[in-house]
Length: 388
Image (cartoon, rainbow, N blue to C red):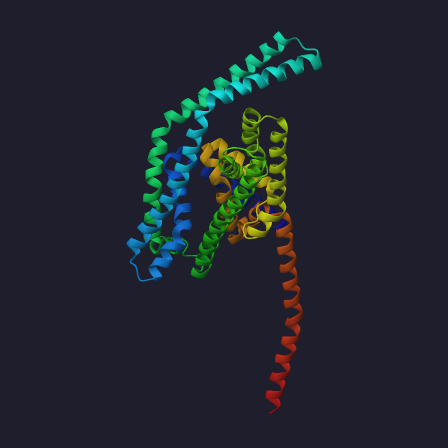
């Protein structure tokens, strides 16, 4: 009887947790206009907090420290954006020549396909035109969506630093709010959970930025040695696509490869670019990311992919960026709540989570072994004191 009650209680807790997660996702979807700027502002506040804290330790007041650190971040972002835009403008000046070269290349490829596979050139051209029309239709649809949402994007860009200022300036106030909101939980545990959430978000963002910087340098070196124009632009572009884990660098190799086909006199340069990017992806996955990010933020690869897909479906491009940081925060929250600890285990990397479980089991065994000895010693001391 008791066993059935426990099973029913467990099922009820699981169903309640899943329902709560679904409701949160639905609420986020319908309130994304305001939620997305808040989420980005939290990330920005976490990123610049060390600078603001350093300035406060140097006896600058909180208002100046907060504004200065945010302005520094905005200037850095604006500078990088300006350099990228200028490179795009330079490349667009050669657009006519690039298109002509690609057209010649496509015609040669078309002739080779028709000759090799015995396919009618007209039939192949019709199929290509249909695919092109569908592609242009899709691109135009996304372009219309982008330009129609330009106002909301601009508004979000203005709101993010404003919200980030309030999060930084009133951080003690928000901390007190969480302590009051969870009165039934010991204050130390609430503070510890908040610190773990901050550490997880900061470690993930700083780790990813560091990895992106290293990958951008490696990409640029390879493209420069191959002799491709605008090497640093394509190297940085490919590193930015790392927001798509496991495939970002591979996708990023397509753009410089196409550019090489259009501007260089041999297709082997394009093959060399693709090959180099595969080497960089291998180094990133096996050496760079494990050593920089390591076990600080350990997420299950399958869950990471699902989070990115779900984030993209719900919030578009912003969802791709926010998916993994939010997943990292959810893992910390789930690990801190006994009823949701299993979800935290599911989000974690299997190898790291199993290692943690073994360490906990070993620690428990050691405590059990020590406990009887301590009890025996205390009993002997009590008996000797009685005899005296």
